[in-house]
Image (tube, rainbow, N blue to C red; front, side):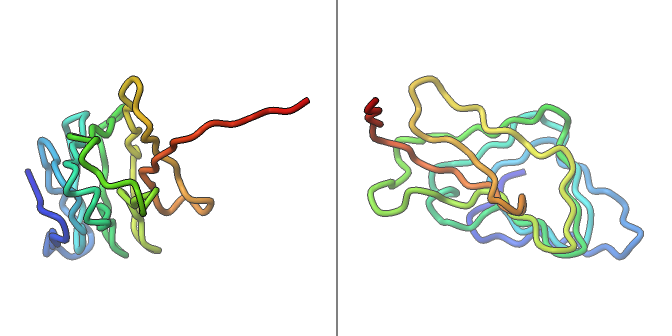
Amino acid sequence: MAFGPGTVFDVGDVAPYTPVTVPALTGAPTVMNGEVHVTDTTWTLRAADVAAGQPLTVAAGAKVKFAAGTTIAVQDEDDIPHNTVKAYPILRVEEGGTLDNAPAYARPRDSKWFAEWTADNTQLNLAYHDGFCILIR
């Protein structure tokens, strides 16, 4: 199932939720009013999804469950602007939302992009690192 930037996936269910199974996920919708299970082990983000700055959001009361071992694959990483913005939110869990089996970023070799969680573990950002470090002893 593919979603464009800013899309809302309103499952329209009431608790107790009956999970909606999604075989594969592309894009970063806001999931609300239900439970979504993603069975594919790759979550695909396009450069446009990342650059839009609107992460996959698990709204309050909603639940998203990824398959165990799911990785995040970003297509066309080189097309993501990084001159003025060095970090983009790609996954956010609102207070009262639930995320099971958080996906890991599959960093391509020689990529300057990496993923890191915020200190409160509610948002995963895709960040660009370019530069060097000088160590003086």
